[in-house]
Image 1 (cartoon, rainbow, N blue to C red):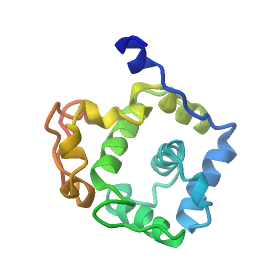
Image 2 (image 1 turned 180 degrees about the horizontal axis):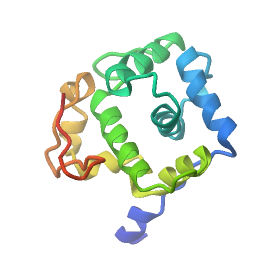
Image 3 (image 1 turned 90 degrees about the horizontal axis):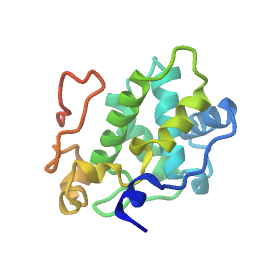
Length: 165
């Protein structure tokens, strides 16, 4: 496979409808989503759902507790080597916000999610455009959001760069 193919060819599991996306988001919040269903695609679907349909949730302030709590509820561990990863989460959160800025008004939830999954921002390796593997895989990156070391992470308003909290 050519390098250019590797950057554009990324299989993903699309969602069937808005109800399937909402089920993931609601299952995350209620901690009833089966662990096997907490996939990369589910992470991004839940993020889009939270941003679009749950204005009552301050995603920036609550995402770490939401995901960590869910992980623990299904028997997962959030430690220095597994479970919740703050920098990756916040990188994809920035990507989801950027993605939503360009979406058409009135677009269905499933269309927005599947378009994100099909885009470069939906790739599992998207954070590596901004972070070196060593930095992204560090304990510091897992435990808290850290600034990129390869390239600036774009912000949804395009007028500012991502800054770690």
